[in-house]
Structure formats: structure tokens, C-alpha cells
Length: 200
Image 1 (cartoon, rainbow, N blue to C red):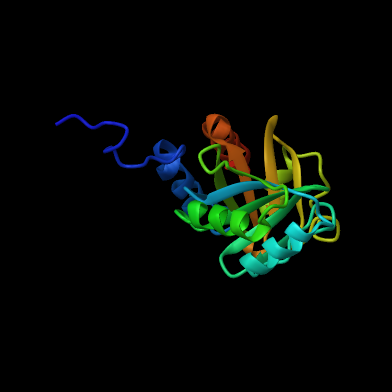
Image 2 (tube, rainbow, N blue to C red):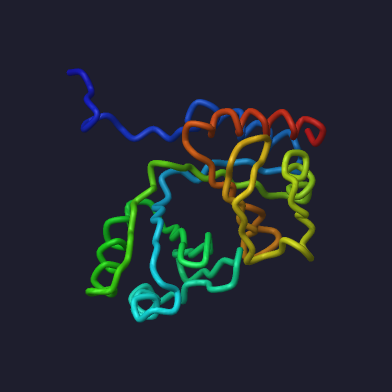
């Protein structure tokens, strides 16, 4: 029987290069680790940061939304990224998008809130290892030194000419998340593999 869109198993945008990412990780001797974190729930949320809805949503999620520019707040499996004065990206475990959206809408009540499920729009690359900063610096104009872009920081930027959301994880050893549009994920993975050749 032929598979349809409803019966076919989910395929990540980087399923075809997963072996190459794993091979680069093995041959770098631990200097670089590249992996995809597929299917993370991602919700774009917009509302007045000083309004009653923001506080209610924070309580409902058990997560205070970050108010400082380019910062990240994490609680359990949920991460909130500041994208703008009234905009956040919530990242959660795969399959949690409907529950998160329901909790946000219920908490906001009659207050204005925009919640858009953008889970299918992006995939997430994990870049870790002692040379992760160096690898990303090849194609990113941000100062990625831990003093300037340390744990708990995020930014919308370009990496290898591709628009991404870059996240410095809680622990420096945890490396970075690179959230990239699915349509550009293959290109960016190839770019990272090429840029990592000096470490393998």
C-alpha cells in the first residue's frame, strides 16, 4: 500500500545527512559535535510584555518569559527565547505544541495574544565541543566569546549567509542550538561540515 502524507513516518529535514554529521563528530576527536534535534515544538508568541496576559502565561507555563533583549529562560523541558519587545519563541519537547498553545490561550483569557505553531518551519542543529565557538565564528559576525555571548543568550543572526536563531545553552559544555528554516537546513549542515574539516 502506498504511503500518504498521513501515514508516512515523519522525516527530519536533515535525515539524509545524519550519517555525515555523526561521522564529523567521530573524526573530530571530540573537538566538534554536530547533531540534529528534530521535531522540537516551537511556538511564536506575541503579547504585551507588561500586560496581565504575560504574567498569567508565565504562571501557566511555570516559566517567566525573558524581558531582557536576547536572553533565554529555561524551566524543565521548556525554553523561552526573547525575539523582540513583545515576541518570544517557546521551544519544547516534540509533540508538546498543542498542549503549550492551549495553556497559553487559556491563561491569556480575553487579553490579546498571538500564538503560532512554527514547529515545521525550523529544525535545530546542536553544535558542541571545545571548538564550537571557532566553528560558528567562521560564518557568524557576532562576538561569540563567552563574555559577550555566554550561557542564556540568544540572537537572530546569519550563519554562513543563512538566517538562524543562535542560542548559547545553559552550560558552556552544552554548546549551541542553531535554529534554521527547514528549507535551508541542508545547505547549513553542508556549510558546517565543510567549515569543520580543519578540526577532523
